[in-house]
Image (cartoon, rainbow, N blue to C red; front, side, top):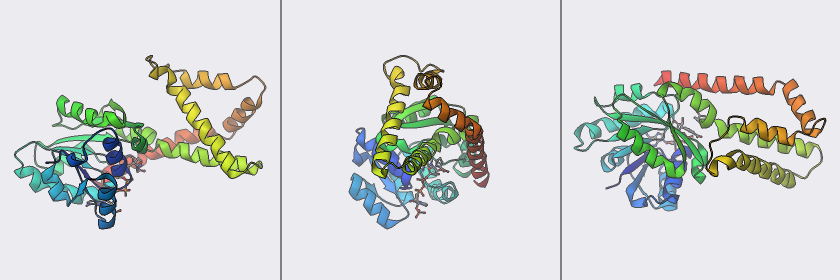
Length: 278
Ligand SMILES: NC(=O)C1=CN([C@@H]2O[C@H](COP(=O)(O)OP(=O)(O)OC[C@H]3O[C@@H](n4cnc5c(N)ncnc54)[C@H](OP(=O)(O)O)[C@@H]3O)[C@@H](O)[C@H]2O)C=CC1
Ligand SMILES: O=C(O)[C@@H]1CCC=N1
């Protein structure tokens, strides 16, 4: 009897699967359901988990992790209704989908079904994820604790009110893409200045890794992350009248902060819109 069903084996489903298994979850305790048979076979071969239909996976497992695109959630939920209705044990539904509210899931599922909404991100794949967890109407403290425990091996976990989830999606859910775009932009700029692309990529990636590790360094040593940590580290790089100050002034002139503000606002608005489709 599996305890976790991953319903949707795409990018985030695989990141969750891979992160969980690498942190010690037994593949015999996990089943996956994926629309594409080829992809299902690939996941079974790669991770040693069984693949089956949504309905069968829902019957097998107690925690049902929905990892399909928001537009596909209705079909998955419809396939789970009977299973949840007749199950003797309580099933916990965990949604990783952007936008869709616990209220929407509750309206589709048998009355009283416990639903927990999670916003993860892809660094889960390397156990460096950021997951924010919010409980629905029937989710108890025990459910939230169980989901947090399930996610802790794949990264950091925060419990927040559901009203924060659209903003969270804009910040940490979509966040990795903003940093990857920054890497691409810096590599292209380096190439424009004449650096070979492989060397440029190495310079940029190692700089990002080093900067990231400096940001979390203090906290990993046991202290809380000071709110000024990013500014303090930036000041330490910025010599008066130097190269960094020249670059930062140009970023400000080009409206860097305003662009970030608008970009995250657009992501949050899109999350709200995806929720309305549910
Ligand atoms: N990618 C990310 O960084 C993040 C994604 N999310 C959320 O995670 C969810 C999944 O996103 P992502 O992994 O990127 O999307 P993907 O399209 O990569 O993965 C979804 C997978 O589910 C499959 N699928 C669709 N319908 C069914 C079904 N009825 N039964 C079984 N499998 C099905 C899809 O198959 P097919 O392609 O053939 O339709 C696809 O392989 C979304 O709701 C998204 O909002 C949340 C945080 C971060
Ligand atoms: O782009 C998306 O809609 C999903 C949600 C957060 C990250 N990827």
